[in-house]
Structures are given as structure tokens and as C-alpha cells.
Amino acid sequence: MTGGALQYVNGRPGGPAGFTARCGELAERYGDRFLPPPLLRERAEEAAAAGGRESGVP
Image 1 (cartoon, rainbow, N blue to C red):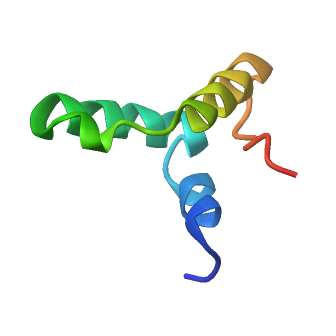
Image 2 (image 1 turned 180 degrees about the horizontal axis):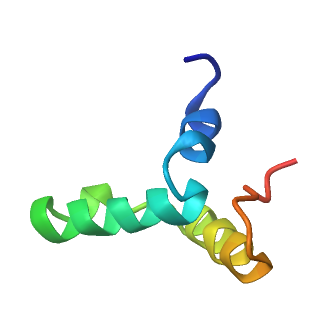
């Protein structure tokens, strides 16, 4: 695997929306430190609304 954190997020099943959902699951179990940052949540919502896996990151 190559790339950085955004490459990892985009490559996860479900893209950014899947990643933020998984973060939510982990936060419920292990605490708020697993919550994704607000900007990532916004981008995931935008991608879901657009109907794709787009990251919204240029």
C-alpha cells in the first residue's frame, strides 16, 4: 500500500463514509478519541450525498 492517510481512507470499504462509520463504532466501544475530525465527517457526508466514494479532497 502506498500513500498517506487520505489514501488509506479512500481505499477502505465504503470510502470515507465507511471509514467514518467504522470510527463511530470504535468510538462507541473505546471512547471519543476514535471519532474522526469534523472535516472528514463533512467530506464523507458530501460523498454519500453525491452517491459515490469521492473523498472531496482535491
